[in-house]
Amino acid sequence: MTMHPTPETPVRAATYRICVEGYFGRRLRAALEPLVACEEHGRTVFEGIVRDQAALYGVLRRLERTGCTLLSVLKVDG
Image (cartoon, rainbow, N blue to C red):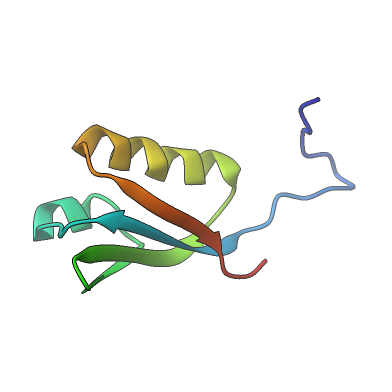
């Protein structure tokens, strides 16, 4: 069953932390703005506010097109 937002269930932004294998150059990091990227231990971690689930899936599609390996997606708050 798919839930659709109604006036009683507003869509809320949340902060996400998305971790991928490897390092991203400046151009690829810029494609995922406004998420902020940092590199640690052979991984790139993107973190920031995502307005809703549709926007989250858009970020994940952009990452998929790079061919990188997705390691984790964590909802930090919201």
